[in-house]
Length: 630
Image 1 (tube, rainbow, N blue to C red):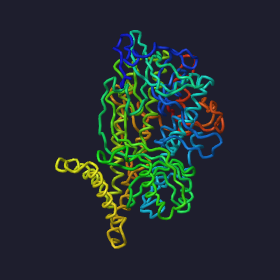
Image 2 (image 1 turned 45 degrees about the vertical axis):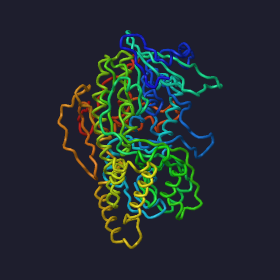
Image 3 (image 1 turned 180 degrees about the horizontal axis):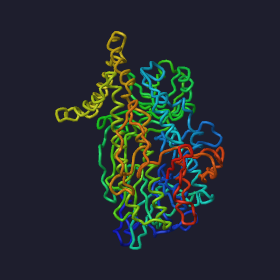
Image 4 (image 1 turned 90 degrees about the horizontal axis):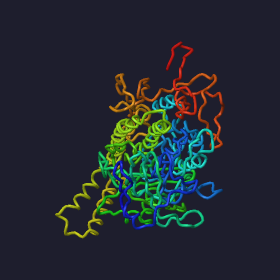
């Protein structure tokens, strides 16, 4: 099988990869569920690909989502009150993303499925989860949270990514059957993109290959190869995008900032112990004598967690670091199960090794503006700040209405050239912020006497030619021994004889937390205040930007009524309210048809389809001040 996508030359018929020459003849989509031709083909059925398909459906555009895995989102068994999801990754939905979910009528369902705010408003720093707490930060007691809440009709949420996927799955299944989502989303599982080509008539042909071992409903194996024709092709494949490599698009930024092992586990008794200790939180940064890691509570009540542990290749190898026995040992050490947590059941579901990058693609589309990159295919951020998924959702939001406008004939295809300059500028800012957040997070271990650069320096020293005579296994043992000695000599984790040094370290830690120098949770400016003003954008900001305003360690959002900026939020007085996209497709209704409408909601009432006559300009009149906003 070809290991990369091979693109046909522009303006010529599709080039067939060697895989297809060896296989049976092409069979096109002959089932009504899998059409031969669609408006948009999306390679990758992750969260961003699903979001884009739903947004296109809302604008009356048909799409097909092609996912190489054989199943949609894992929701647990029917009737299970505590289902275990697939390996969770992202979990924070920023305010702007929740505004987009509000457009789709999904915000209320997301908030109902998410844990209550009281369970995730803190970051905690501990010796062990059940041991001594070194410090904590409540991100919702200050001015930043209050101002951010006032700036939007939507609210930030904390929902594990697989659960968000399940909500999107429900909506894709109902697409094409309701007034609010007239476009149809077709979902093809068990196939992956193998090659594509752009024809002289402007259409894109996409060749698909079966993912080995996948069977269709009824147990029958699908065709070896298939082909679909579309007007536009979307790469939502993730960080290792084959389409991006085929286009020759490079990535810019910093690579391999750190390596981590991500472990998905459940420990349902842990919530009751944390509740007794009054220690609910989203992130738990643990500095124990046996392990250092971050435990992310995806849902405290269900006991669903993801632990992140750093490791240092090449001496520590992914296949060794993801072994269940080692993962369980590190988790037990962080929780403190061997020191007061006996009897608590711990179950590991999966473990993955991953590399943290801060990269952004040099282009988000091909030169003909027929192929577009979204999500991790276009950018990869450190998870500090949670901007990866949120940026992907906003990529989809940006390109969806533009594709729909071109497909419906209400706009020239020239508007598609604005996608790269608009999104790339924003993503570069988010990449730089995420890298800065990563370094802010390292200020805590540094304050505790655990310099974060020491392990990397030790690993690099063990790679030098001077120690080549030492066997690799011995070098790994030496690395792990030195890391263990460093943890045990740390004054915070050492016996009372070093109490003076411990007090000094804790003083430094509290200074970092109290002066808001540690990793934040809320980012008002980068959430709501980024603007599309780069050369090539549809709009050019003509007004000078105000001086950045920092409060509680983060740049604050400053509303701006100017081209390229998000329209500021203010509540509109009840009257005949503009029709807002309801969540009727999910059998969820809004509280009242005459509930206050936000100025942000008005965008969701504007239709792109030529079949409707919705006005494109809305007049806002402030009856109190007799000022008019347009």
